[in-house]
Length: 327
Image (cartoon, rainbow, N blue to C red; front, side):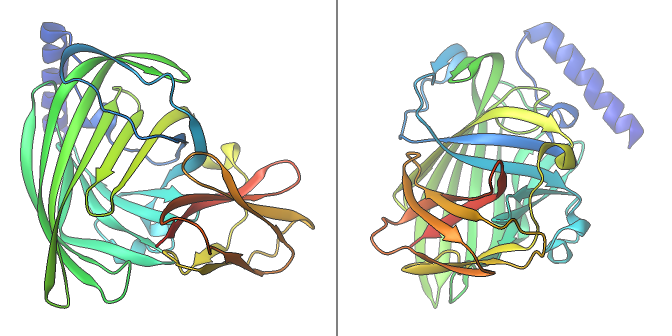
């Protein structure tokens, strides 16, 4: 294994010297334990821009919306880690969901997620990246899994086509990043529920900066749900406990939900007065609820279907955060 890693690093150094292009390898891209990533959701649909070499993408006018608080953890220490025994890194999304990955020197595999509202797991995982990966690199990967995020559960199967279709300079609301590699992922998926199969095509564009172990910008489009999602990295800090002092034992269920969901807090370490704030992808506040008991009902009537972001807020800091999916 040590020889394999050394060969990959040598190949990376050689290619980078020859081409001058950004090159992704496991050491500069795969998620690692005990990092924090704060992402800002942008409130408008936007074009991914052009493919090709030496591009300049200007996303400086993105409208800041809700905040996504990610941290990476040891899977065995998480709530649902026992369901993903081959995972070696977990993205913890503010008590909203746990996303499980398997990393190695040659690939990044997505194994699925679990939350209070459902579960997605793969018997044949989705390969998100193959290393080394640089401009014009491409691969095709098949996947098979089970989606239990709603009832009844559905079987899923499909094919991912992943291509590094561009590199260049990325302008974000927080600044300019150079030598960024764009990865285009086209997911052709068939979802079968009670004998009925629905086909869908999802497209995702991720911009990677070598050395940052998460995309610095993501654009996602789903034909099936007629939805989009845009988010960008606003800062990265190491040390989960130093960066945030979240209260534990927070759960939102059901999630996804239709007319109503419930915020349940089992932690005994609660402030006397705090509230829940709910915003849409435009960053507009659609609900603000005082929380004065261990269970609080959240009325979702009148809200459009889509993703909403909640924050449990104390007197001086955010105590917890996550996403609510409204059907």
